[in-house]
Amino acid sequence: MKRLCLIILLSILLSTPVFSAKGGEKGASEQAYEHASNQTIFNRAGDWFATVGKSAAEKARILQERKAQRTAKRSEKEVQKAVRKSGKAEEKAQRKEIQTRERVREEVQEQQGIKTQTWGKTKGNPGKGKR
Image (tube, rainbow, N blue to C red; front, top):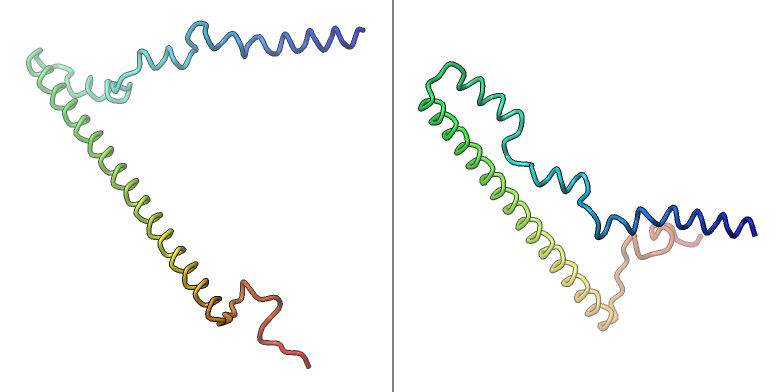
């Protein structure tokens, strides 16, 4: 009876965090993403050094230029990522096409009765015969 009570108590204690997170408050990572931006501490520090001792108009101009440069760099990276992704898709399609051709070639050879010997498909070493 004690074991049963202990098992029930442990299952309740272990399952409560799982069920409480679904419909409850936002977790720490979701709260962090709400306030996240592309203005990282590294960018802000660099901006501060670039604008220290400047007039308000000059600061605004410098900050705007730097923000535009970051946006352009970010969009360029996204384009490169998309190009790499499409290149991988093309490679995958080519590999699949080659595999299909090889499969068709093997089927045709089997139908014609031609036996191909490859290292992967034969048992033992084909160079050694029975002596």
